[in-house]
Length: 292
Ligand code: PMP
Image 1 (cartoon, rainbow, N blue to C red):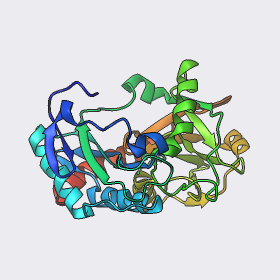
Image 2 (image 1 turned 30 degrees about the vertical axis):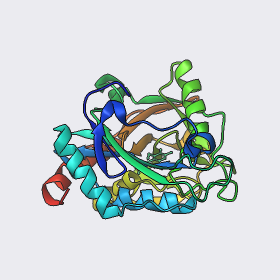
Image 3 (image 1 turned 45 degrees about the vertical axis):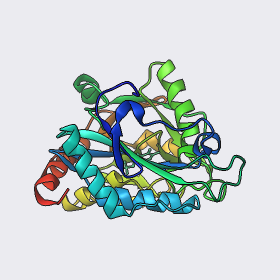
């Protein structure tokens, strides 16, 4: 990804893509003092841009640092970068990290850097796969407890177990991994939240040790608008035996039907199809009403 044309917003300036570099003694690289966002723009406008920028700030605060650009400055930077890149639909990746002045676990004095990159990233999966639903392997790792890691932060360090789990899943021909939490409850996939459909009701795990995703909150609103019964609760994995439909939601994944989790098989059903359609409409409707 580093050898491309275009620009990256880096510490308040637009710099050529290939020149957006960090030093090898960057604290964020050694000690994972880094937080990031994943956003999508539709029709030239970032969906829920303000919410994502506020979450980036909150993620940083949880790790004990403050981003030197306000959420509004980040919203404006994203809008300007989309114009400069000439994109309509794209993925947006803001990140913030501790720099390289001090080396060691403590790094209170280090400069906080911030960058935003964007690129075209259509659907994760092929239309054929979305028709059948993706296949998930059970992950080797569990989501840590909130007193074991800063689980409410979208912190780079929390993705170590996601990358390992996703690599293991892909090596065996699956598309992703399903993670349990520290109690053995159903948690989420490696980069998306999960929903189940049981007897026409929509159930989703309570987000007490993983991200309460912005897409998750949008899809919950859409389910309510469809007058579907919505239940947030602890869900044990053996409940998949009495589950009719499973789908993942996330900025990149949007609404992705799941056809298999471990040995449990699912059909892509009407509730998943409806909410997927509603979501894809919502992100486009938003572009017409909201400011960038
Ligand atoms: N969980 C994880 C681990 C993620 O990486 C993401 C993607 N940011 C989500 C959930 C979904 O969050 P959102 O809907 O805000 O993209």
